[in-house]
Image 1: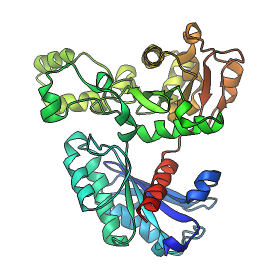
Image 2: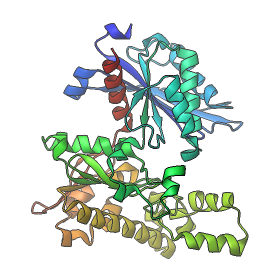
Image 3: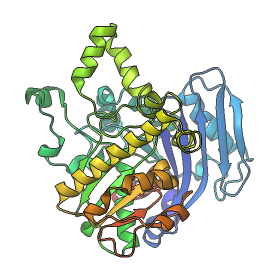
Image 4: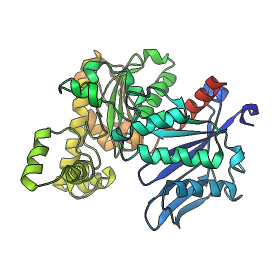
Length: 421
């Protein structure tokens, strides 16, 4: 039984609209304290709902399977594929030979609205609550519910499951930060407000920064800059979120891979009226056809755009890079002013961790705020490495810290299970 083992094997499941990513992480309270948790296996089931799904899974240090074509008609089929691989005897996962070796499951849930402000053990009431939050996260919450139900049916209700919400870290924002300038009745009746996302990532960065600098979390004052295909910035004061760039949905804020970010709503009304677009078509436009892709006309991938701008001198690729950096600079400056100063800015996410070019562009005008980038350190630090990239005399430090949302979820699972004993 999982209660008798020193370490727990946690299945961390992240179901997207057409994918199911997972990791198996070995951890417990002692391992959390010592920082000795281990990822035993990972994988991804992609193209769910299409005729030819793709499955990639491997145990840490093993070859595993890559891009196996397999029918994945729904999320239940994807989770079945993960469990069949574990049970096959071919997975070679250390200490996990069957589903009986899975002790608990942690689910990343996009939206908890105001109902869920911390990670929680899943029961019928929690499932009902996540269902009620579907209007706030219509693409993700239904898929994540399917993951919960499938795990319940396959593993049984005796295996603890925990919901970890993208929105919970931002629940500490004050009304002045989360309210919109709409008639107050829309907040009371429809719960229209800013919720923020990437909360698990920003929380991990906050804790990791405290660990690196050997300070209590309550002493952390940073601007956490999560840059990827989806990007957001979080102002962390005294270890808590006081503001964040994403809003009611993950659309608000920075320019992103395919999302437009901040925009005058009246411009969308004008487009709708002029081109005769429906609300659904506008939603597709601003979420899937805009951002880096829309501006450049080339790609939503920062690597492609850096090559096009720097090697091929493509002007629209350069414009996309300039706009991306410009928005990041605006938010960093605004949040440092809002917080009354910060000790550091921390880059994370796929772009933040791996793009020295974008980090340099972002920091170019920040010396006026006491933020000075060391160009050599910045160039040398890439591809998942962590470290400080600011000049020795920089008043505000600059760090790169790779995020680990899966590890944060696994830790929450352990803490929730331990508290329930």
